[in-house]
Amino acid sequence: MLVGAFALAHTPQLIARPDTEDRDLVLRVHAAFARVKARLTALRVDALAVAAGDHIEGFFLDAVPALAVYVGRECAGTFGPYDYRFPIHEDLARAVVEQGIERGFDLLYTQDRRLDYAFFVPLHFSMPEPAVPIVPLHVNVYLPPQPTPRRCYDWGRALGEILAARPERVALLASGGMSHYPGTDRYASPDFDWDRRTLETLTAGRGHELAAITGEELDKTGNIELRTWITLLGAVGDRPADVYCYEPSWHHGNAIVEWPLPPA
Amino acid sequence: MTDAAHYRFPPASAYRLNRCLFAIKADAEFRERFKADAASAMTQAGLDPREQALIIARDRAALVAAGAHPYLVFMADLRLRMDRSSFEYF
Image 1 (tube, rainbow over the protein chains, first blue to last red):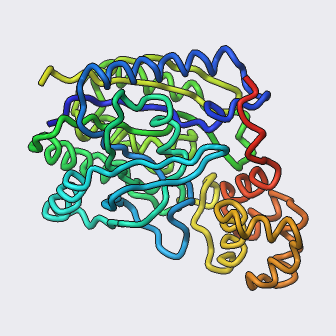
Image 2 (image 1 turned 60 degrees about the vertical axis):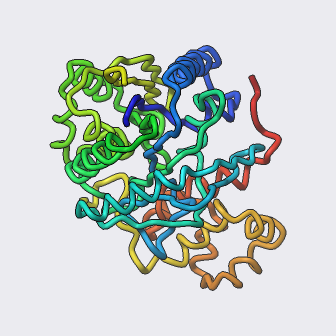
């Protein structure tokens, strides 16, 4: 069953903490991550399904999947001084890929692909105690053409139904966002106004409206990664969001959000 | 996605360029070889002199104009400047 749904920033500076960053802002985002950790612990989750966009670390141009499921025994990777290793919930991962394909989603699956900080940052700060296995879900955000927001929403709806029918208590995490433009001339000018309007839409419980956003608009507003949020929105439907924090830094709109679900 | 987009389809003509940036970013062993002898590492990676010159110059606009993915340019440069000890200042 699906017992929790959260969107979490994965800005690498939240772990790296270089001296370019506003210390107080970073610590406020850390406090929001800690709230998610406490919620996940209280929800007694058995597994985390984590929708994130690989940053051209595991998947390169030799093969570009739109949507992928990691179904190995474990997955790993490094970020800065950290070597991360997470067990995969194999039964759940296999159910997601098998039933996803039955439902018409031509998913790539991998049993041997490393993860990157899109997965590590939320898990570094918000993994419940004791730690639980994960099901990593890749959504292509950095290599055009990416899946449309509509397709992400539909995949999320199928994913939500698959998780709802499972015996495990699962929380769905969407990693990424909000506005940022790494590697471009706009790196220091995120579109915070667009972010705030979008958060208003989400707190009003109108998440389905994000399925109608175009890929062009996501690119223009620095929100290509919102495809992971839109995937989550397909799973949770039009529930009002609870925004734990929105912290605009000089390069990144950092948001931590929960969509409270009925107790299960 | 239009030509005005921040992230565009990476043209096949830039495949080797992007592959080299990807290796600098994501392959620690290649990155060390590159730091030790960039020309040798890039020659072994199959880059022609024009592509090697683009990477050595580290000119983001020129690399992107040649079809390099902006995120790969950004991260390859960061990984060359960053070491594992340059973390957690506060």
